[in-house]
Amino acid sequence: MTRLAGILTVLLLAALAALVTAVALGSVQLTPAQTLSVLTGDGDPLHRTLILELRLPRALAAFATGGLLAVAGALMQVLLRNPLADPYVLGLSGGAAVGALASMLLGTGTVLVSGSAFAGAMVSTFIVFGLAHGTGSWTPTRLLLTGVVVAAGWGALISFLLAVSPTEELPGMLYWLMGDLSHARRIGPAWAILIGVVLAAMPLGRSLNVLARGPMQAAALGVAVRPLEWTVYIVAALVTATAVTLAGSVGFVGLIVPHMLRLVLGNDQRIILPASALAGGILLTLADTLARTLIAPQQLPVGVITAMLGVPVFLYLLHRSR
Figure (spheres, one colour):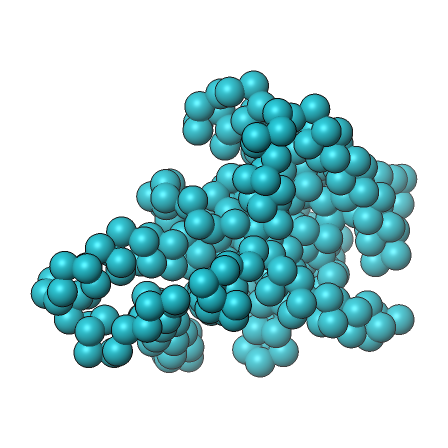
């Protein structure tokens, strides 16, 4: 517990630093003193509007999205015993995006958009894991091949939905698909799900540690393997759908963060899961800050930054898995 407390303390301080950096940097630069003055309830009215109504909500949305995706990746990598498992690579993000886009085109409310994204992520989960398992056990090659094919299928459906969409809605939809946090304002549900999932998963950490060694070993040690697997399936789909609804399709966060944390902290899920939530939030907050400031006043989709980071790491991990 002392080690866990120390790790979480360091990550919490890094998270606060990332959030302060996110609200201070942009097309209008603010000094640390001006930023802290606003955050403590004082400051210039213009600076208060800039930080409290624009930058801080976006930074909190980025942090929640990154945390959700990293937790989803950590759970999938344990379940599949594969460091290449990730919501984006395995097609869950694509399924959630199709569900959300279809719901948007029908003009439904926010709740139904979120529900449709969750349904799309669950459908993708069943397809990928069902086909990858087949009548035998999972293998990295079979899993990756199935995920790539399913993700390509979702990409075709996304192209179809864009083709039949009204012309005036296309720019916003395309930007959202690349990962867009500029309109992410309903952050309360995302934060509630992130905190709830981490708190609920902590007591399951010991069982997840055993499951990471294989289902047969877990069953021999008294773990209810099938209910635990289904729980992980559903939770991974839920957090992925929440992240996609909030920020669009942001790739590779769930791949990079859990794997790098395992290299540094080991494979104890009681440490990895809360650490992934914090480190994923830090990564996406800084990536979104870079997306806002790299070619300011123009803004890049945050998915572009995460892909530039994630593709080399994915290729390296794929090379190592041989």
